[in-house]
Amino acid sequence: MSISIINTVKEIRSLRHSFLLNNETVGFVPTMGYLHEGHMTLLKNSIISNDQTIISIFVNPSQFSPNEDLDTYPRDLDHDLNIIKNYLIKNFNNSEFLKILNKITIFKPEISEIYPSGFTMDIKNQIGTFVEVLGVSEQLEGKSRPTFFRGVATVVTKLFNVINPTIAYFGQKDIQQTIVIKRMVKDLLMNIIIEIVPTVRDLNGLALSSRNAYLSDEIKNQVICINQSMKLANQNYLNGNLNVNLLTDIINNKIVSTNPNFKIDYISFNDPINLNYLSTIDKSKGAILSLAVYKQD
Ligand code: PAF
Image 1 (cartoon, rainbow, N blue to C red):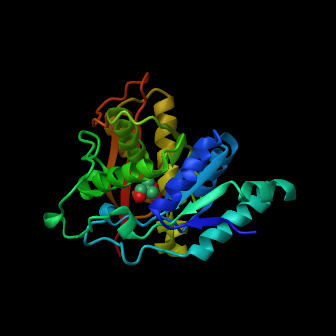
Image 2 (spheres, rainbow, N blue to C red):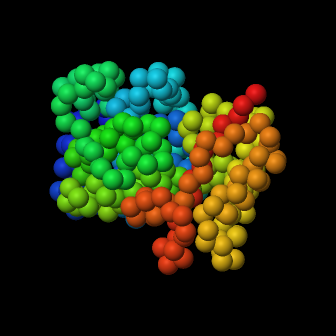
């Protein structure tokens, strides 16, 4: 028994139509593949709350800029199928396993299915329809990747249009992405529930991510201080320190004193709704803490 895989918009639409006729709810887990335990928690949430689950595997070109890793982004369907099967075997008994497998569909389209008018990576010459969520796409990750969230919002709109899910699941790891998607769904009056699932972390504190495949074991061991520094800042915040400069210093000192060749790109505290940069945290709202660190040899 294997998981059903659909490659075309036409077929996935017709499957979705059959779910509608059966009055079945549909959970949707959008991914770019190279699945890991983090994706599996999204899948689990979807399986528990919906009659059917569709997982998309699509490495979306419009969210990569020409100098990024579109060509080398890890792609391995056998790996993905094994991750799903092993996860289900581990978490469900024999009779449930087959039933659940039958209720999961993978949607794995080619680029031409999702961009029927064609697509160029040459940003200046891109024409056609894109979705922009202004005001929450320009800060943080959007600052160094100016067309990233436009690409995410565009592809997620397309996938929502095709799949029309009841509930769509996103990981909290990509917190700015979740804010962009929630705002887009609200502004475009999409009738879809967006559920944000807590981050799954490795033992070294690193959030699980397909791109962790790029990191050596040595680096993976060294990054422990990043998560520790964030926990330290959080503890300070809970003890009443609401001053962003002071909290930033705590993080900076912890990382640089543990690993002198780690350089801080940025440490930022932002409003959890509009992503405004904060200098003081309002305890009734909290804040999003994000930071980027690189290693200088
Ligand atoms: O989070 C991701 O993997 C991607 O940004 C998404 C949501 C699948 C869109 O390509």
